Length: 621
Image (cartoon, rainbow, N blue to C red):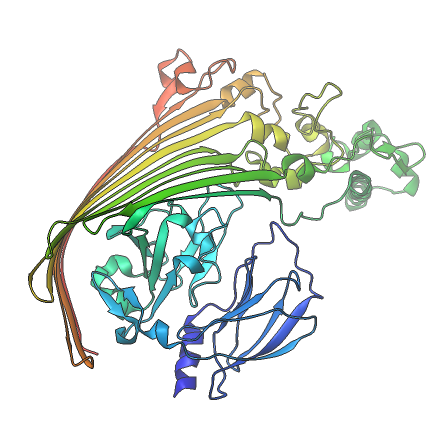
């Protein structure tokens, strides 16, 4: 029966861990394998094997077996499974391990949060995973990254290397084509679908409600699962001050292998000569290999038109001797665009109190440069929790959090606008900087009409001269009150408010080429534009619950909760787009042209919704 249950768990859980090789390279020759069993010798299906100090890990298969490529044999392997004591071993090359996990009776008595209630692990009937603060990887910059390899059955992926992009968390897979599959995040009792912007050091515990039974109390918005986050609170005693500093360097994990300038020149010359021959043969004209010496003017005469597919730039080909000329420049555009990006993070917290009043105050500052030139994020987190025991039956609590971020971003997607794809397409035969150290712009574009090269700008210029700024401020306020009118009956009120404001600014300068038009031309000036967009979001919450917990003879337990909740959300976006720029002295919408049509609305919307809920749950293990 145990094996059947574990097999079901494996089907639900992730089939592998997403690893981040930004700081270390995994060598396929360094690996360990083994078998994980319980005390009865039965295979443990879905056990986590994690290489400590990295984000590298895997899980056991249906036979309890695993194989893991390790980054270093100096690292410790952690083998864990819910309800069992974590094993730690140091592997050796080629090890075939036999690992026996022992049941941990302490974990079965731990209290977990399951939505408006707390229960012992042994009383939980749904699929719930609990992660304590000491289990989180606090060396990561975000909460999502700190969960990698910690929760079985949950897929966590870093879909972008940008410091301002969050991780993608899938608790129950992709549940909808059109709607979001993100889980519902509940932070200190406040439901929200926003990104996890709090500091990992501030977290006390995380509970993940994975199945429909455990998440049902939150209704349809919990279709993607629920992530319950409880932040650290003050403890009785003298004030304690904790300070943590981290420094790291991020780099591109792996470059795309591309042609160098000599290989590119060979490809261009061979391709254009072959195209010239094919055009002649298909047109029924006589062909001789001596025609490969034809200049571009002669080719145009023979073909009857100047077909760019048959034309070769003079600086790449010696027409008379039919020889490829070695290009003057050999530019690796990935090396030009990407960099080693330093990151630093500071975190300080103060907690303490008496038996009547307890407090926890923290502040965190992070400055993370992006691996792409000119990108990065600065983030400030402030958090305060206060608990007051008014009497033996009445207590109140207050929570406050603030997150401010300042992002420097780049365009992604289209190769002619974004530097990421541009670095893969821009020809290596062109230079990035001139002899004076100035960016060379419009060079590849200038060859597009005659030689069919892509109409694309220097990707380094796209990254450094296009201005994209996104600044946001989040504030959350919570006030809770709990009263025990009768023994084991608790009445609780939770009042909260959330505000978010964001200012987005975009500017494409006149100093960049537009298609085949060089920088500074009338066409480049016409393509210059700016966008200013302001987003405001307000959310209000009021929840009232009655919770009853009763135990008889330390054997029989009864738990029930009933409640009422009302939540209102208002979202307002106002965007403006400006054109008509003649220069780049004013890089905001206020620098638009004099024509009334140079200023238009952009991405403007407004929405409101209100949710009223009644809920109840009874549990009798």
